[in-house]
Length: 325
Image (cartoon, rainbow, N blue to C red):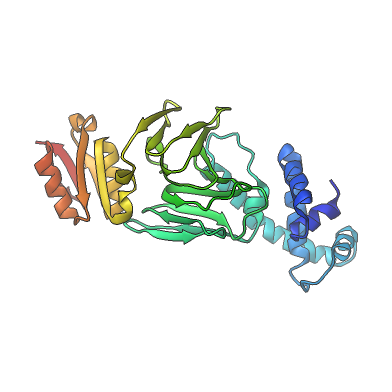
């Protein structure tokens, strides 16, 4: 691949066909990725003190020259590399642990990507460049580009979100999570993928989605009101029928549980109320809770737990200790 063509792509001046060729070239070999990273860092450094109207040939010859500006350029490159390289390592380790996926370097080396996060008990709605709407649940993070490329609409999710995606058959929409990839054309669905949870859930509300595990070749196709649950320990996926309204009720401040392990219940309560729960009874570790908390205060939740289940509680060192009665 010619360096001149790569610089043209970095500047955003490649046509759709050229973009596809370059992206495929980057993905096919790790050495290609490394070369692209270096050229992009050099380009950014060389343009820090230039106007935006330098043409491709001028930039290309600047890279090739051995003039005295080389020292200053290397200084800029080192400074940029000190930021970009640790970011690349962090992104790969945290977003794709135990994953042999080759990350598209063009995605996180660009400076036109955005990250939206939520804290405990917080919700946020994001409108994407294509008009799609994403509502983030508490303690979640969404990474997306300011503009989608010509082939795909891709976002990365940590946590839980409800997606209402505009249909575009020419640009599939992809949600990348820790272990799964969800692919749609236009639909509404919920994805729950918290690092501390034992399972990842994808629930379809309308339309159709494909759920792909990294070891699989053929995706699982969901129909409305179906949920695909990926067990991280077992590394398998099960599909079941659910009431999708209950799954997405968190958008209205509700928490609805249906034979949910208590360990999962307290994780969800922690995200909503920002209080740490400790299960002190071995029997409760196997207990599955069914109930609904409709915009309740924490004290109301605890009282309802006590009334509707064999659970008692007490406060200790700013933690809520749960034990069996």
